[in-house]
Amino acid sequence: MLIAQCRRGRGMEAVMNYEKIAVTGGAGLLGAHVMHRLAGKAALTSVDMKPPVEANAGLGAHVTASITDFEAMRAAFEGQDAVIHLAAIPNPREATPELTFNNNVQGTWAVFEAAAQAGVKRVVVASSDSVFGLSYNPPDWPPQYLPVDEAHPTRPTEVYSLSKKVTETIAESYAARGAMEVMAIRPSHILFPRGYGEFEARGADPQNYHFWAWVDPDDVAQGFDLAVNAREYRGFDVFTITAADGLNTRPTLEMAAERWEIMPEIRRPEVYERLATASVLDITKARERLGYAPTVDRAGLAAKAAAR
Image (cartoon, rainbow, N blue to C red; front, side, top):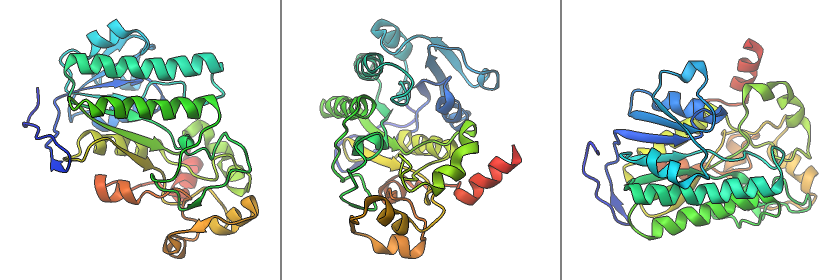
């Protein structure tokens, strides 16, 4: 049940204070942060193949199921107001190409179809900045311009990035039906504590495959919280979520010139004038539309790493 009646339609404001939210992948690394972020704001249900970690055990109900099991998804979403879809093979190194594509694509379809049949009103889905075709792809494919915003062309060449682009296509298709509101979040490389030991080396490497873009998991959770509760909905849309700065140890444009030799067009030079190490990814849209404000920068990351 919704606390407030939704008013839907392109360009119209919608009050979306949901009572019941299901989180696929709620027992995962990112899911744990999202569950903690939403705790107390809604009745939560984690939907995951594995049980929640002990710290998350009291945050809500839990359903053990695979996202590729349509009937299980249909049952899990019954009575839910909103769904946050996080569950996926998270990168091209975790599983075979066949498993990655099937899990991420078939699983996304099952989640959306089950949500539609269950009458879910809003779905926020995890995509990835890899859809731009910059990370995991040919090294001679520089961005067409900097900073990279959501309008930048997407051209993935490997299976994980492709699966995320198809995920966005599925999401847009269900949004077009008009029965639910759908948004996608494109996080950059999420730096969990297990990666703290390598961020200095990544930041010093001009060839870092994430082009130094990164984000703290708590800030990704912030993005999903803001999206699922956003009052304004203009139809299907995507939002990039990243830190304001990069991991890079030198100015972003200096390292970009070293990496790509021929510099991309700098469409917003003021970004790098204000902050020399600003991210190559643009979060202006998330800031302005969702109210996103990253809380952890590189200095904060270093402090967190030192405290462990």
